[in-house]
Amino acid sequence: MKHPIYNTKDKLAAEIAFAEKIATRADMELSILPGSSPLDYALVDPKTKEVQLWLEVSCRTDAQIKEIGMSLSRWMAGVDMTRKTGIPFLVGFRWKDTDFILQVREGFIPLLQIGDESDRIGDADKKPVVKIPFRHFHNL
Image (cartoon, rainbow, N blue to C red):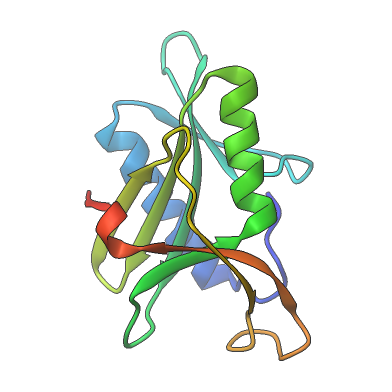
């Protein structure tokens, strides 16, 4: 699992708990993908162990959020994995105590920006990011 240094043990535990909730709701098992994978999770059929969904999740507690952001490279990895495997890509987002989910559909193009994670690691981390307005997500 590729988790940057700014993800603490508590943040990782919250992320895994949220991913487990998504898996349970889908009647699947959560598989944590290795660090060499561009995404962090897959949901698998508990009987056949076949991958059914690619999953990327994020947990935030910021005071106000109008949109969900993620790195363009991670977004493109999920889209590319879906295109190549036919397995759907989900984005999960937990904000405070509310859970949201988005199944990425072919042709959906979020807002592209040059963003940063200055709230976590400093102003030097400018990179391409996607921003997805809340209206595209559904409550879990």
